[in-house]
Image (cartoon, rainbow, N blue to C red; front, side, top):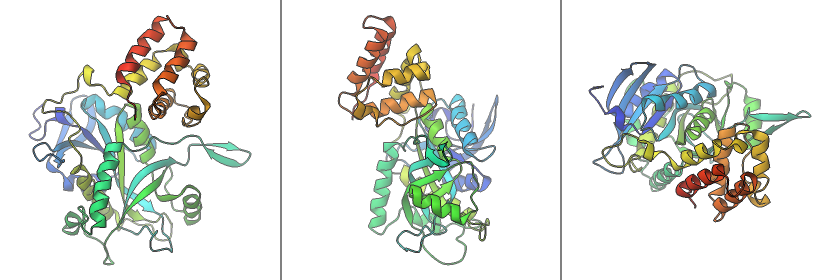
Length: 381
C-alpha cells in the first residue's frame, strides 16, 4: 500500500507503548512520521524513521499502542505485529515507569530520570511454598546489539555530552520539564514488571531491596517474552514519572518522562547499524532467525513437545550446564532458553545432539532432520 511515508516492507523495529502520552512522545522524535491502517488489522500504526549508524540507511520503525496496559496485552501485540510487518527484527518498550527513590544521592532515581533495563524481573511469576514466594524463571535478557549501543551512549554521558539531552531540553508543550529545575540522569539496571499498578511505598521498598530493582512497570516482561517467542531481540527504556507511592502519584511528570525515554531511544538507535541487510529487506523463508529455526526443529520432535519427556532429555546434559538453564513452563520458550544457554559453551551443540541421539536413536529420521537444522543454524560464543 502507498502510505506516503516509509515503506512498511522495510520496518525492522516495533516500538510498543502502553498509553497515549507515550505514543505521542515517540512520534515527537520520529522523522517522516505517518499514521497508517491495514486491511484486516484493527490497530492504527505510526511509521517513521530514526537515525542509524549509517547516514544513508535510517531505521524504519513502527509504533503501536496497546489496547490495554499490562504484560498480557504487550505479549499479544508482539505476537500480532509480525503478521502485518513481516520484516520486524526487534521490539522496544518505550514509556514511563515508577522509580525507586533512595536517601543515597548516587542511587536515587529521580522524577524525570531515565532507566534502561539490563534485566526484567517478572516478580509476580512465582511459586508459593509454605508462605514463601520463589521466582519461577528469569525473563530473556535484552539483545546484545542494543546493549552495545547503550554502552556507547553511556560513554558519551561520562564525557559530559549526553546525546539525548539537547532534544529533550528544547521540547515545547506539553513535554516541558515540570518544576523544579534539574537535569535528568540515566540509570541502568534491573526493572520489576508485573500486572500491578504500584501505589505502595512499603511494598516498593521491600521488593526493590530483595531483587535489586531500580524501577517498576507493567509491560516489559510481556515484551521480552513475546519478542523471544518470535525469535526477535528486545530492549526497554523508561522515563520516571512517579515513585510508586499513593501520597504523591499524579500525571504531572508523564509527558516529560515519556519524552525523556523517547529521546534516549533515538540516541541509542543512532549508534545501531541497520537491522535489515541491504535496501531490499522484505523477509523471506531463507532469512528466518537462526534461533527461531532451531526452536522450530526442536518443537517438531515429539520428545521435546511434552514437558516430562523434554525434561528427561535435558537431564542427560552435563549437570554444570543444566543448572544454568532457566526454568520455564512454556515449552517453546524453555527450548529457546535451553539453546541460548548451550550456545555459550564450546561443546554445547554436541552435548545437546548426544542427548537427542540417545533418546531418538542414531539412525532415526527425526534425529537426522533435527541435526541438519541445528548444525546449520548453531551460533557459538
